[in-house]
Image 1 (cartoon, rainbow, N blue to C red):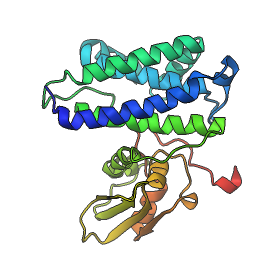
Image 2: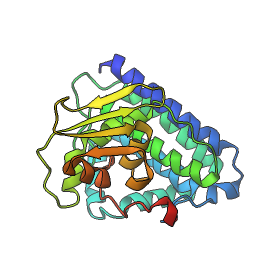
Image 3: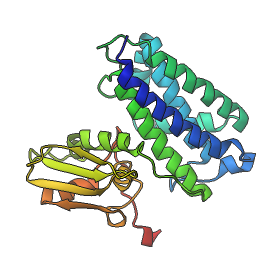
Image 4: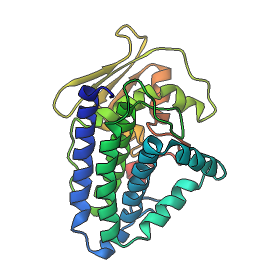
Length: 266
């Protein structure tokens, strides 16, 4: 089976992130699930529904790869809309049914990820992923959508070291962030040194890189999930390539969508 020592840690963080969101929405009245959370009109129900749908897709990729492959072909016919359509379908469910289904799906995905043989990759809409990489991606998405929900509901958002998973993907996808915007990926190395909420330093890239990014790990995660404008975070760049990267960094697949708006302009 896959390397459980690494996977266990990521799945533990995924469970904690999911349970936090679960606690925020479990006591909401039905009209609370209709609270709008994004400029595009996604409600709390859309956010939870999207997470549930992605869990189901991830589970299918592991347990029913042929069925998942057919789903990829279907998605290819509407690459810009199939995610919104799935979220809309899930959001139409009664809140108690959606919540119960999401809980069941989380447990099923956790179990499925632990069965993947060591070294085997899981098919996905982008490049195939290891179980640990897929779990890390689920942490990133849950972290980002949880932030949307908490902000819309006016809830305090705890800063935890789980944001490191988001930062890790944001750093790893530097080249993709350029390519998805039609830019050539730069060859200049960038050293990233971020400070986590517990005071730990999270670092990527060569120590002698000619350019650097420093600052708050939590804020970099907000940049990487495109939840904040670069002017509103405690993240700093040294060098032109690093400075530009901060304006386009993204930890998720697909098109970047509209650029974040400055807090003063909201």
